[in-house]
Image (cartoon, helix red, strand yellow):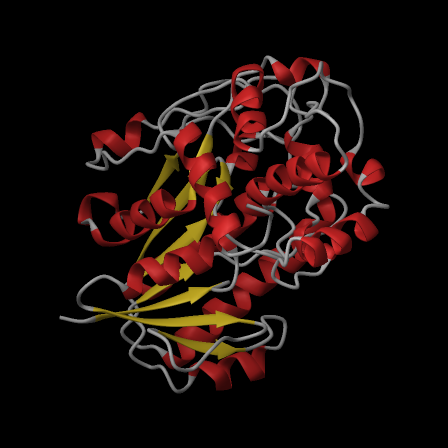
Length: 350
C-alpha cells in the first residue's frame, strides 16, 4: 500500500531533509507544505499556504485527500518563551483541523519537538534527559502541542509520535536555527579578515558536554517512529550517538578552514557580526559565490544561544535503540561533510 506524507514546514532544515528522504523511499508519495511553496516539477509536490489562515489552508489541502501520515516540523520564532506558545500551538491546531476535514484516511501524526521539553533552554537540567522525565514550569509550546496532539488522537483514532532531537545540523538558508551555517560563515569571515578562529561563547561552554543531530539521521528516525507499530504513541530522543566538547571540536573546525585557533574570547555574535554585510558581499564577489544575501546566512542569535550553554546538553537515546532504531552519525565527520556541501553549493569559499 502506498502511503502519502504531508510534511509541514517542508522548506526548513528539518522538514526539507525529511521530505527529500521520504521521496526516495518506495511506496511513499510526498506533499510538502510551507508558506513559500516550492518547485512543482520535483519528487515532492509542494503546496503553499499560510498556517495562520484556516480557510486557505483547508483549500490548499483539499486536493490531497490521500494523506495518511502528517509530519509536523513548522516553527515560528518569537522573542520570549511565553510568546512562542500561542503562534506555534495555533499553527498546529489549524493544520490538524484542515487535515481532519480533508484527509479521512489519516493514520499517524508525527510531532517534531526538542530538548526544550526538558527545560534545556532555561539552564542546567538533569542529564542525560529521558523521555519519562517530569515536566517543568510552563510556558513551553512543545508540551502544549503534544497535549493537543494526544487529545486529537483519542478523538480521531490515529496514532502519534513525538521526536526530540538535539540541535539539528543540515543544509538550509534563511533559517533562524542553523548551527552549521553559523560555524561555516563565522569561520569564513574570520579567514577573510585574516584573524584566528576564537570560540565566542561563554567560558564554561567551551568545556561542557553536548551532542548534535544530523538532519538525515533525524529524517530516518522520524519515518521509523511513524511506521513501526511498536512506536505508536511514544516520544523518542534522537541524536547522533556521540558526545563532544567544543574544546576538542573547535580545532577541527579551524583546521577545516585553514585557520589557527586563538584562546576563547566571549562575545556576542549578534553584535560583532552585525556590521559584516560589506565583508560578506565582497567575499561573494571575490570568490564568485552564489549570490546569497547576508540575512540568509546570519543565524547569529541562534549561535549565541547554543554557544552560551555552559552546562551539559545531552539526552538518553537508549529508548530508541530498545525500540529498534540503531543508526548513528559521527558528529565530527558530519560537520566536515556539511562544510564541504556549503563549498560545493558555492555558499562559502572553497
